[in-house]
Image (cartoon, rainbow, N blue to C red; front, side, top):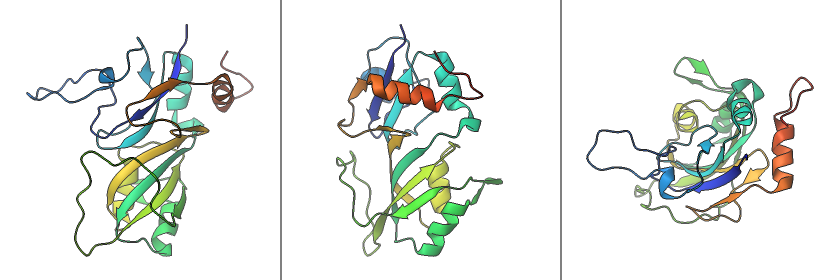
Length: 202
């Protein structure tokens, strides 16, 4: 039986079920929160990032969502040092070069106020006399540490990063560390998202 669930990953949790590092102090993993057997994350979310993670044991759906050519949207709330001007925002929208790769076009806007999010544990380190701002960024690809590298490339380092949506799926209603199964409507929309060349996931 296929399972499809979303999880609100807290800060400091690895996006895997085991910590394979050789360090003495083991880090938190998905196993500490999710007891459903044989599900695996679709894509990754960095250890120091928070937010929405989709997990399933449906290999076909997982493959299609992980394939860069499908380009499904992923939306992030990004706290950055200082306040990005319109020029910096436009550069992010058009794509910037990170590690010899130009990112695809993205949707970027400055949020008018700090979004309503649970406090991060541990909290970020503020610098005195350095203002911060929040961006909403929607990307259609998922390169390694892409959001952080993009904001750094335009001169506004990321302080906190929360993925709030994957396509139509959202963390609304979940607290950090909580998970739930997808509704039938959410699942049907997800399968439609993966439709390509007239074929559908059954």
